Amino acid sequence: MNNEIVLITGANRGLGLATAEALAKQGYQVIISARKQQALDELAQRFTKAGLKIDTLLMDVASDQSVQQAKKIIEQRYGKLDCLVNNAGVIIESNYEFTNLPSQVIADTFNINTLGAIRTMQAFYKLLAKSKNPRIVNMSSGMGAITDMNSGYMAYRISKTALNVATLQGHQELHDKYKIRVMALCPGWVKTDMGGPNATRELAEGISGIIWAVNTPANGPSGKFFRDGVEIPW
Image 1 (cartoon, one colour):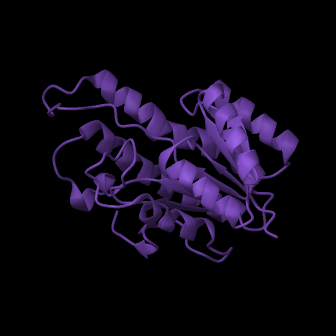
Image 2 (cartoon, helix red, strand yellow):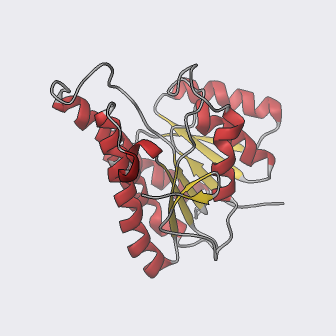
């Protein structure tokens, strides 16, 4: 039986929820976080009926206070963390061009997509350091890759490019000092609420790379960017 503890942020729907259910079926103790208690309560009932080992946690990655409170709860309940999956993210822009994209849209996107992951990495690294195989999986996107920077969705692209930088910086510090592996992941364009109905990948395809990353061993990769288990350019 796998007794490792995995925290997935923003996992009340879409990729995060599907990943949580898949990992729970593999035997992981999964913790999902979301911003709304009602959504978590409804999911808790669903998990109980399905016999899945999934705990719920109220946490808003856009809030320093909320993240710190969540850390205290996990420390009290479990005493450690084996894997952090930074899945929480938003796209809140539409039909904007470079010349008229409001700065507040950029700031709000950055606060969740980039700073949200940084907040959790800073909050949970000490709990991760207690694991025999500590790893952080940051959900990025090919839209943040410098090598594939087409026009459109500028706020989202900026936030994911910055997340890639944070992944590399996190790798350099956390891996050297605490043996915590940090990697970025692109799930592809997946049919979720965020991806929309025109996306090219089904949910099962989108989560396959996440499952792969979570299952990598202690001597596995760090400081790299992946899609479907294959390294891709930054």
